[in-house]
Length: 364
Image (cartoon, rainbow, N blue to C red; front, side, top):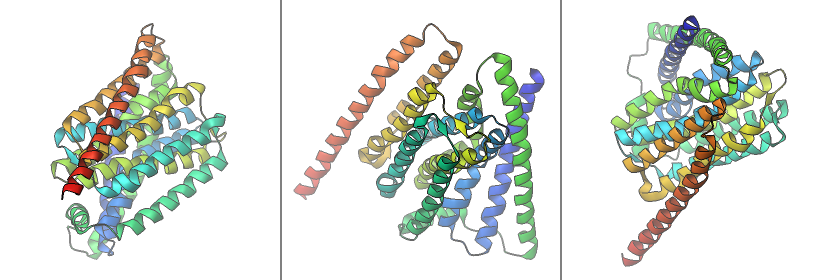
């Protein structure tokens, strides 16, 4: 068991290093060829930070461990919003750009509900995979078109983070190409180690691959998103911090799950428990961001603490459900009342905020 855990940790480290090399090489190469920093941030960096999820999910799907793929995607999406944005806002309260509230978050919610609808029959087959992947292409086109209309402040923010920081020479071009190749190789190697060890851990402790995917695999593969969002928040780059989490969620559902459904020999089976709890939680998490983001266009430290509390409750439920613990009914009852009451309170605050804004507008 010790060797298996060490292999899991090694796979995780190799994945993260591979993702870093891939992002570094691809973003610098793109900048050298005149791609704007905003486009680099919205596409190359967003995909690069999600590359551990891609590598692990595709490896698991191809190996017939589709539960690990599904668990990784759902767990990562829940973790990205509840934990990453929660921690990020505690580090530094996040200001939310209007475009995120009006466009990106509704898209994330729509994609979450779409995934729920496609999984309603208990399976994500190749047709569902094609549909999701086409949705990814449409979203990337939309994001690139929207980048042209971004405000000067947002463009400067991305330029500060992703503009080319080295001279463009033949040597740097070759070096960045080598970074990309090494990064891809490490992603393949790391995903093999992580998936194999995750399956062994699940068998050893007697839980399903889905539970392992929802928990340790999801958290591990989301580490690049944590680093990107927290560092961006510390620099005051709120658009990057929030856009990274929201964009990663959209990419996970459309790209990772879509390609996973195409690669998996028999598609991705969706268990009844996932349909009854994990998928609705993911959709709820996407939904609850709207009132939180809308209230004063920011995520405060209090709201960040609320998001983290939700994640602790969710993980507690997943663990107790896997262990068939007798206290599960208490947790279920707590979730059944705590979440709706909190959501109603957030709606009430949002309505009050809207009325206050209208009052100020009328007075002016």
